[in-house]
Length: 403
Ligand code: C5P
Image 1 (cartoon, rainbow, N blue to C red):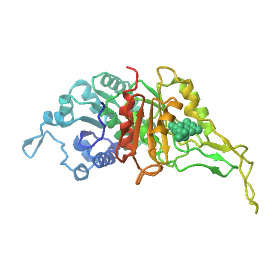
Image 2: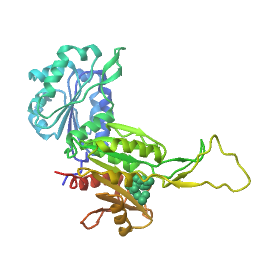
Image 3: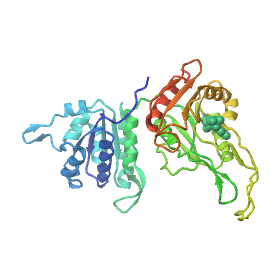
Image 4: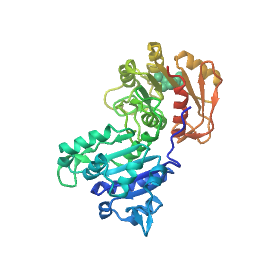
């Protein structure tokens, strides 16, 4: 079974070379340390013109190493390279890329690079024309072909030189995800997934709606874990105040169940598996009113009709190679009802959670679930964060995928 990829205890070697974008690495170090990773920073001499060793060592909780020896003591690049679970060289200048290609070893980053056998994540950042220069591009192509090398392309935007274009270092949160991806096993590599998430809003008039308090947190946690584990994720999201998950293939934002149905139906035929995590409204007003309904002294009745049941409808279309996972929110733990839903909706697995859970459930960061699969005893889990639950669900989903 797949181990949960937390950054806790992971050993991350960071090589910073001389480039203004290095300021972003300060925040990356914070993210890693907060997530429980051990961080060792190496820099070139040029990098120290941009960042102070005191800042780097304070944030990383270790002395920063910038020379082959410190106060007469050799900084053992072999030990550093063997210690690391992953080595990220970011920002990687054109100079460092060229030296990595030719195998030069005139500083601690390069000697450690030549000794490393862990994944090497390299993220070039430089001025646009320098990045597009044929020699830089050739060097990147050569490095990409090397085993265990993971290229993080720069992004386009305004550059320190004043020019616009390619060459910016990605944001620290993106680099953090790249590191998690580098460390994760990839059971879903090459797999395409439809994931719906969040609430739906069913409009009464042009400003009012009937909705529910789903935050989209569980869906976002699933999206993130799937991305880390190699899946191409198509997220269909109802309204959510959460920041968009990073690295998904497409994200379609919808409001009503009808819109969610249309988006899911389009994607579904091209998928290997689907996760129906959305809290879809069961009913919608038959005729949404134009404009804003005026206040009256008499009671107001709204004629509601059923919404499409997305999971049930797509369950009928499910092909042999496709796997479906659904959710059931019940008032209390009701295994029979969850199993009935699993069969009715043609789910291979259903995630049962209950409303009456203290500290958990709708809109909360935590939840307590039970997994139900065909021909298997229900699998209960303790109260966990939704991020942890996402990994648990994916671990069990793996066993359902055709081999
Ligand atoms: O019947 P119930 O709403 O509890 O079923 C929950 C499961 O069905 C969830 O996976 C949810 O995403 C899905 N569902 C749906 N369309 C609806 C109602 C629920 O896809 N209209």
